[in-house]
Amino acid sequence: MATSGSSSSPSSPKRQRLPAQAPPPPPPPRTDMLMALPSDILDDRILVLLPFHKLVRTSCLSRAWRRRWESIKNLEIELPRAYSGGGRALWRCARPVRGFRARVARRDVFRAARWLCAMARKGVQDLSLEFSLGRKPCRLPGPALFSCAALVRLDLEQCDMPAAPPGFPGFPNLERLDLVYVTLPFAGAGTQLEHLIVAAEKLAVLKLSLVITTTGGGVDTWAIRAPKLRELFITMAMGDDNGCRIPMPLPMLEEATISFDRLFGTQDFLDAFQNISTVNKLCFISDKFNINMLEGITCKFENLREARLTIDFGQRSNVLSLASLLKFAPHIEHLCISVILDSHLQLICYNLKTSLGQIAYSEWDEDEIDEDPLNSEDEIDEDPLNSEDEIDEDSLSSED
Image (cartoon, rainbow, N blue to C red; front, side):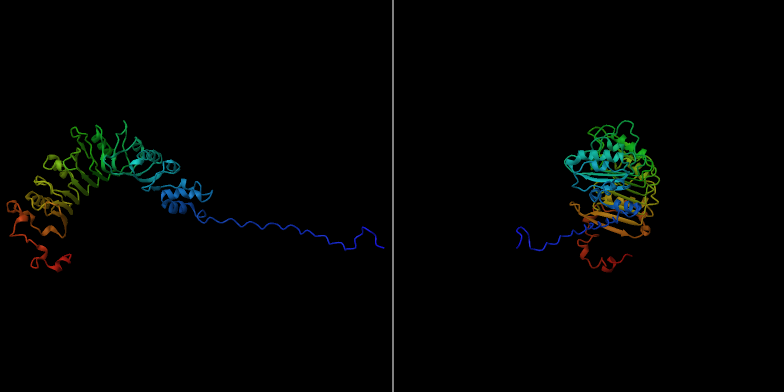
């Protein structure tokens, strides 16, 4: 007789717990191949070449990269045209900055002031600011420019330069100064420019293009005194005199481009040419004036080998200027003449890559020069390009 409450089914086996398995080991950390490079290769040959706004973005790569860009030395920073950031990233640069270039929109003028303050602290050596062209030039805000004491090159375009603070010592390391469409709208502007040039004892290249130093009053004359200058570029606006003079010889000058029509025919112009007589390359424009601008020059340009001249062969005075050039430059070899053919100022350039030593320019007689050679039917063919008798096609392709 079966006992109630008893179970006749066999007992189920107990489940055995398996020993817990250890989790798989984590994968080894990836090796940052760039970080493994020596710093002189990673920093000085790779990162330093990145555009500045992309270099800053490397801080997002990892924690190790967060501040790596700040220690890059000798940065050449060039901000893109659409850059609208402030100077925060510039201030974070821990090393001196070699170069800084920016094209400044009119709406970013005050940002440029913060950029200049940062660059002055970072010892910038090469500074270039190009402002957007407008009806009025942008005013360079603040005196931070004059705190960039380590400048080797300064390039300003289309802006107003402020007056320097009292006691400003200049830029003693400056080797190149480029001012293009720059106005100095204050009294003593010429004195400030002269001081900038004199204080830069190493100045080798000077470019002053359409620089204005007057504010409606008299001409504030100032002088270029740069004994180590090698390249000089001066152009004044038509009919304008910004007071620039060259009263002293520039003994190391090799190349000069000069255009200041207000001085033509004056003793200041003759003095300027006398003091640049060491050049081997000369360029000037003489097409708009009815005087022989080079008349009266007695010195010889013994080193002059290349000259560029813009003249109007329809004016006797311009032809005489060419004759004068050949007289005071006996060793000239290359002559580029931009010729005005009519009142529409259509220019044709002739490159005369030949030795001019065989030209007997000393025998030219001013009385024999036709005052209106373009209208002379006897000497000039009306259609010289179609004349088979005077132009040899083979000669055009021959350099000899």
